[in-house]
Image 1 (cartoon, rainbow, N blue to C red):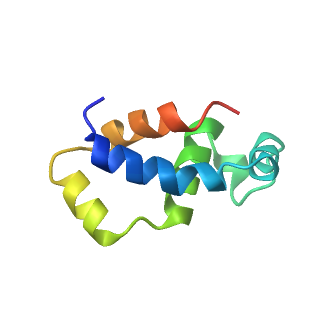
Image 2: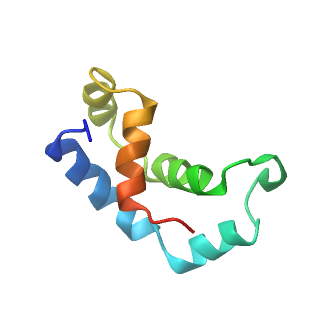
Length: 83
């Protein structure tokens, strides 16, 4: 993984409290906006959590200075287990 430990730790700290069983069940059963248009529900869930937690702009600036979405998704996959 290319994400620094500092940025990964901040991401994990923000994401873990939101990755709850009720949220997971809603995505498993398709009870989320535009579920009918979602091709990869696991990826959608990971990224919806990320947008929900609203990482500070400084975090985004530092992360996007050296990484792309695929790197961020790799980090998210290691934090958020498949539905």
